[in-house]
Image (cartoon, rainbow, N blue to C red):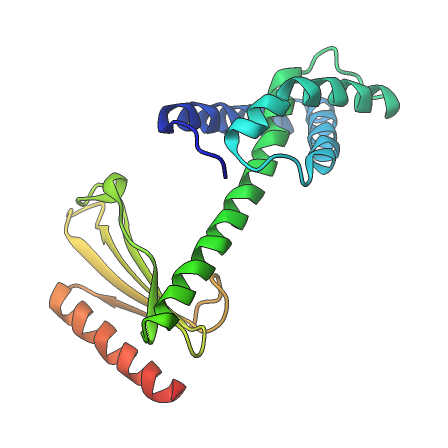
Length: 208
């Protein structure tokens, strides 16, 4: 993706998320408007497939996307009069932005894994807490992948909502980022670290 200031990106993403949130409540209050809105967002999203490579690119596409959406509405005989046109465009841009984020993450993971292989490592760290997840205000998460097998070791620390004490979890995902195999919950940090180390060794032995 092209570079853009963090503030501009944050404002852009917040606007897209707000647009999406404004659409979904219509399903409960006005099903006709909801169906028209969702249809237009879906059709415009297809039109945007392959467009842009950054938030800045998508922002620049917005005026033309608005014109195209009006064209789609006319072609499909969809009434726009009681819909927020700019919000619909932003909702479609949100879908395109998620695709760009996923593609960027995949490319980043590939680079991290290749660098780890070149360094002779058995595991590559794909994810770790950043400044926004420091402390116990939110979940802290580490994701490592075993290079020989693709097995992912996911470790998390989350606060207990009642006691405020930390909860420690380990997940071993056998294949793909969303397929969970073994899950272990622990209450002690040292036990959590030792269990993760033992799992790493077991996976290393299995992958040899």
